[in-house]
Length: 81
Image 1 (cartoon, rainbow, N blue to C red):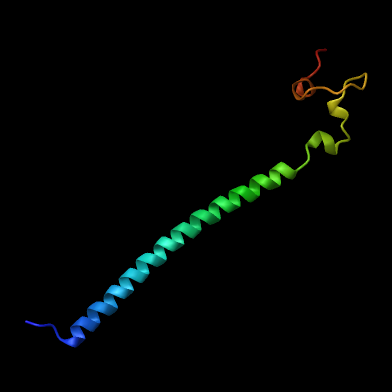
Image 2: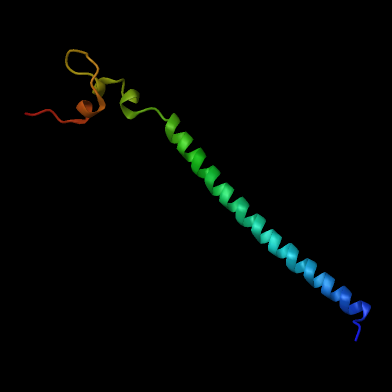
């Protein structure tokens, strides 16, 4: 039995709808992943450009009583009483 022209046309339309829907979901997933990665990169860049808080306070916390630059570990320690 041969299929009619309308049956072939219906199969072709259904196949194109299914293929285009699958392609749309694949593209949407890829673009969503790229968007998440781009957001993460931009957020990290914003944090990298932000000045340190001790620089905003004039650098006083980063120097000892004689005016010498302290390392980050020394600057965060509390002095012994």
